[in-house]
Length: 149
Image (cartoon, rainbow, N blue to C red):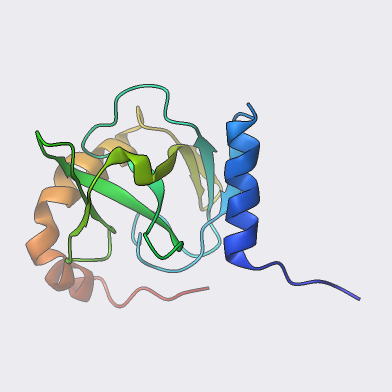
């Protein structure tokens, strides 16, 4: 008999592994909020945040209700609040502090290729796609609706 693991439990366990010193923990992406950079089923590698966060970083954070979210930092305010948005979204979520951040994505595997923050594709989404937030729905409409696998 197979057991289905709850996403919350799974990510709680992943975060616990990171806190215990495990490095480069890979997890699958679920959902489509990071399309077109990441698609459902792609893999990301997580690490604890060991250097200052910056605009364009993809982070795993936990909302007040406990739900885990993987989105990109749009802005870090002087008061420490983080403005977060998915690559397929227009709505900005505001995190009151970095204390909600559980991990940073250090690499991503999409269509058989691995990308890290120094890759051109990552740079493109962090520096070109991110400021296009108000127009994303139009741009995504031009290329057709993304399909979840």
